[in-house]
Image 1 (cartoon, rainbow, N blue to C red):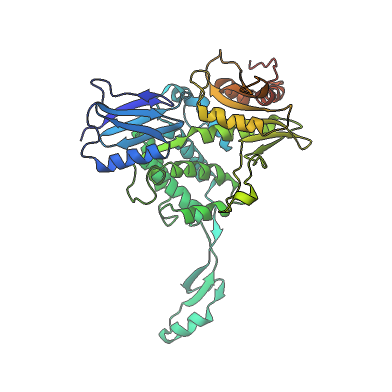
Image 2 (cartoon, rainbow, N blue to C red):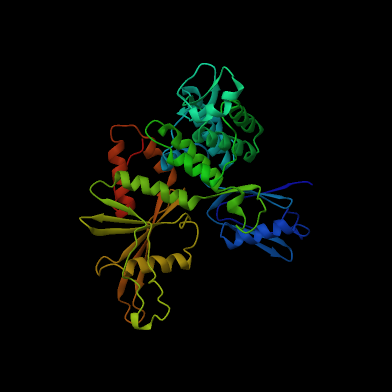
Length: 442
C-alpha cells in the first residue's frame, strides 16, 4: 500500500482538486478509516467531508498527524520551530535544555509532535545523567546474611528444609518505581510516534538504558496517576517529562477514536486552543501586577430557570469565560482566548454570540468582553464590535477583538534586558485592557 501525504495548516480547507490525493473515492474499502473520519468530524478535531468528487478537509485548532486509509494527513501550526518550542516551554513550565542544535532545528521540517519528543528526549537525558530517582521498596527475600526484619511466619514454612538462608523483609533502594516505569513507557511511546528515524533511534537508545533497572509496564491511566501523585520536592525534576508524556498520551489513539471502539488510530492531534489558553493564563497571571487573574470562573446569575416552570429540575446554564481580571473583588476585564487568527479569518457567529453574553452579563457601564487571538501579522490591530438595541440603536455592549503577536511574545519572554520585566508588564496590560504602550523587544 502506497501512502500519500496531504499537508495543510491550521484552519485551512483543502478541496479534492484534480490529480490530488483527495480526489475520488478515497475511503472506499476502508471502513475503519471512514469510522475514524466520522469520529474526528463529530469531535471537532477536523471536518472530513466525503463528497462525490473526493474528500474535503477543513482543519481547526488541532495540529498534528494521523493516518486515514492510504492518506497521511499532516496539519501544521502557523508558528513553528524554536519560537513555538519556547512558547510551549513557557506555557507548560518545561526546562530549557539545549541538547540539540536549535539553529538547524528552527529551519527543519520537523513535525509538531517531534518538537515535543525532542524535548522529552532532552528531559530524559538530563534525568539519566543526574541519576534516576530511587525509592525504598518492600522486598521479601531468602538471605544467607539477614537484612531488615526476619519473617518468622515465613521461617516456619522453610524450617523443615534446614537451609542456611532466612526469609527476610527488607527495604533496598531501587530505581524500579512508578516514576521511572512511566518515563520508560513514555520513551517507548515517543519512539513509535515519530517518523524521524534519527529521532526515533535516539529515543529508543534512551529507553534501552532502562534495561535491567526497571520492570517495563504499559502506560495506563492508573500507573500514570500514581506517578503524578508520587511527585514531591525530591522528584520535582520529573514533572516536565511527565507533562510531555501526558501531552503525547492524550493525543494518541484513545483520543482519536470513539471510546466504545477498540480500534487504535495511528496519529497525533494536539489542541492548540488549549495550549494558547495555558500560555495566556501564565503570562497574564505573572505580569498583571496588582490584579487577580481567575481561570474559567463561572459567571453566575446570567441565566436561571423559573422555579415555578422547571418541572424537570434542570440546573441553570452558566457562563465560563477563560479569564476574569479582578481588582479589589471587582471585575475589570472579561477575556476569552480563541486560537483563530481573526485578523485573517472571519469572526464565527458562535464566538460573537458567546462574547455578547459575557459582555451583557456584566454591570451597566462596563459591558465589554474581549477575544484575545494569536497572529503573526504585524499589521493586526484591535477591532471593536458594537452590540446595539435593534430598535433604538442604543449601545448595549462592546466586543473587542485583540491580537497577540506570537513572535513578539516570544521575544518578550526571552528578553533578559534591564527593561524586560517592565515590558512584559506593559504588554500584559495591553492584552487585558487595550492600554497603548511603548514596548521595546530589542
